Image 1 (tube, rainbow, N blue to C red):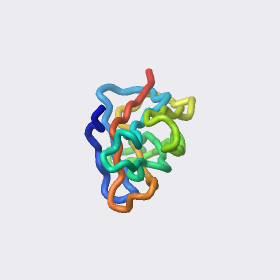
Image 2: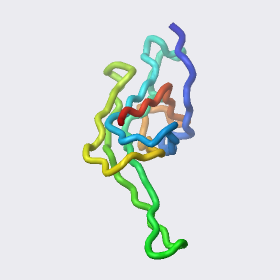
Image 3: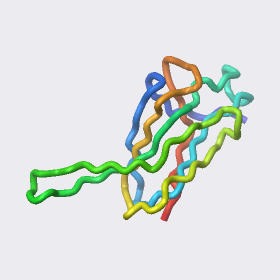
Image 4: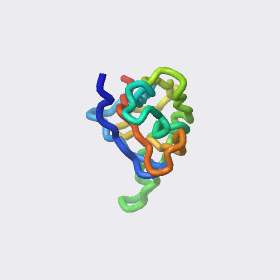
Length: 126
């Protein structure tokens, strides 16, 4: 019945790289925020709204010091506060290989200007 711990991001726009414990071919991501009833302030305006998920890797191009960072967008999503606090989003299929780092970019939240809050992130895959 307690709201749990918030993973706060400064402002309504933020990005984070999530290092996975083992490389994964990601198929879905689950994001959780508190429900309005569980919120200490009675609001969920700090919940993320628009966000993207991507992976990136480096490849060497002809020499040791020539690197090209290639980023693959896995999806653009909207976390909807009117739905269940735990929401799962299916990622783009056809990922060429497993990745150890996932990039999560929060583009906006539901109205709190000072911070955006996430309570849990889960990455699903093989």
